[in-house]
Image 1 (spheres, rainbow, N blue to C red):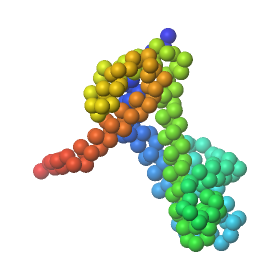
Image 2 (tube, rainbow, N blue to C red; image 1 turned 90 degrees about the vertical axis):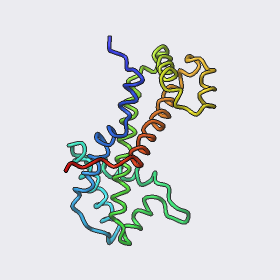
Image 3 (tube, rainbow, N blue to C red; image 1 turned 30 degrees about the horizontal axis):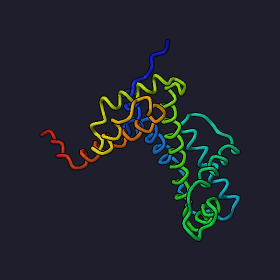
Length: 204
């Protein structure tokens, strides 16, 4: 029988430092290695070509595999279409094309880069949570019990008090939300401590 994960193991895998190393850094390297310095396009055909080539390059660098033109543009279109535009703007893809005509092609590449990175972070998080059998009620209940035993004291007093009034079984279907909230509290606190902590001493 496969070993069941603990809450601490799940939380450790959601450490932003690990996500940065596994996901964000490879995507940043892919963006930086794109050789095109072009800032604008002359027409829609060139826009499609540049966007498609960028996705193919980025995908190859991150995943080590080729992606055909149709899938590459579909990915770019999905990402650009998901971006909320300011009032008065064109549709997302139309806005990207307009920006590319006016010298902001590199901004479009940046948006695609962040979109591809964001999708992989989402996929990584889903992979982490999928290690828990969604039909294993006892395991989900155990996750909540582990949280209440070890981390409830980190919550604001009012929230902790309300949480303690609940039985683990009542919160079993919310264990993922508890884990996500905990990650935000703990690793967010760590970032603040690091920011305002004393600087490391340099060796003489």
